[in-house]
Image: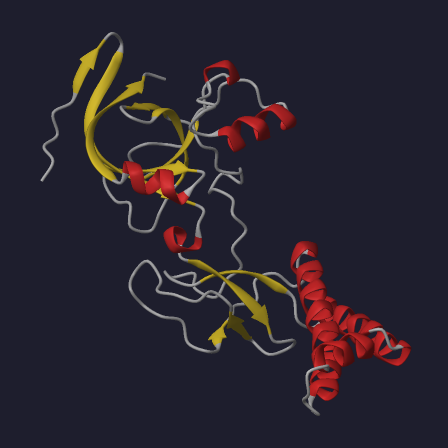
Length: 260
C-alpha cells in the first residue's frame, strides 16, 4: 500500500504514485476491430486473441448505436475489404476450376484462366459490388470490447477530445539508433519540437491540465481518465508502441507536479 508522503521541493509537490504504461494497441486498451452487420445491432469481432482482462470475444457481439451515421474511415475500410474479398473469391474459383483436371500444366491453365476476359469482368463486378455493399451496410470499425461502454465505437481520443501523445524530446535529441522510423516520421511530419505525454488519472484528484514529471517517462499532462484509475496514487502513461509500454510496465515512482 502506498503511503501518502507528499513533499514540496522547489515550488513543486512530489507524491508517490503507481504508474502504469499503456498504448493504443487493442490488447492494452480493450478495443477490437469489428465488422458491422448492416441494420443488425451486432458486429463480428475481427481481432483474434485474448482481451486484457482474459476474456475472449463471442462470434457475434452486441453493439450500441450512439452514432447515427458511421464515420467515413469505417465505410471506406469496409468497402475496400469487401471489394478485395469479392475479387479474390472470383479469382480463386477460376483457378480452382482450371486446376481441377490435375496434370503438370495446371499452373499454366490457372494463369490462362486469370487472363480470360470473362474472369476479369467478373472480378471487376464482384469488386464493385463488394465495395458498394461494404461502404453502405458492412463498415469495419473499432469497438470497445470491455468495460461499461462495451459495444460502443472507439474513436481513439482522450476525455478532453485530443489525440494521445507520447512524450518526446526536441528532434535533435531523438535517439535515431533506437527508433529510426520514429525519427523519420517526425522529420517528414515536421514534429520537431518537444511535447508532453498524455497521462490518464483520477480527475477528482488531478484535474485535466495537471502537469506531472514522472521519472523514466518525462513530463506529461493529465488529459484522460480511466474506469479502473481511482484515487490519487494511480496514473497511466501513454506510449505510442506496445513494446515501449511493456518495457516501462508498472512502477512506483515519486511524481513531481507543477503548481498551478
